Figure 1 (cartoon, one colour):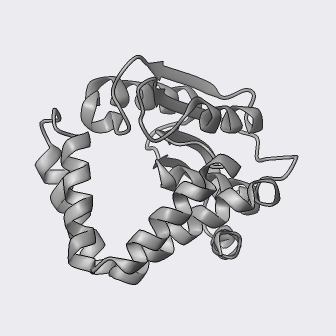
Figure 2 (cartoon, helix red, strand yellow; figure 1 turned 90 degrees about the vertical axis):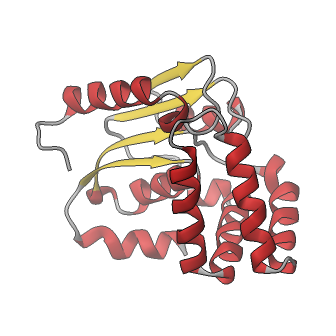
Figure 3 (tube, helix red, strand yellow; figure 1 turned 120 degrees about the vertical axis):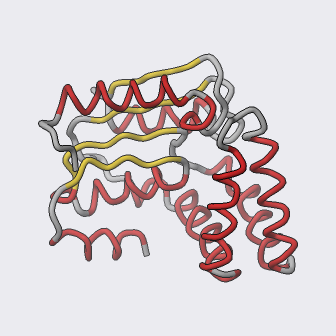
Length: 199
């Protein structure tokens, strides 16, 4: 599915791609199967899932499929509030996620876990030996509870020349937990690799 979507996108202009979490995993697939779409990659709080994640993702997929949608929404909200509890804009973003999830619907939530599970199972197939090469920034926090150093290392192996910016803390969502540091890192990268206005 991700490969087909990336191929369909190949006719559009190239962009500076900035993605977080699962979005970064899909951006990596996009860069490989539609390289003309990518001017640069900025990947935050992300990595590549692998065999060690399959059982956990299968459990999440089953739970999401078998749980009433309202209960799933409540669980997502509680998890995000716990993750972003110290962020000034936490309530705003929790509301945005809730609205987007409601709009997409229960099946979309199920599909999200299915795609992540497929990506973990097909790690070698989805990521060829000759990945896209270009300006790449990888940003992570050492205390990210969702993305391990193994996940990040897989990205670094694909992009050995990537810039790696690591913060000692900040969790999974640096835009909320360390907004000044995050925006500075992104801006410096864009200034180094693109002429404004950035796209």
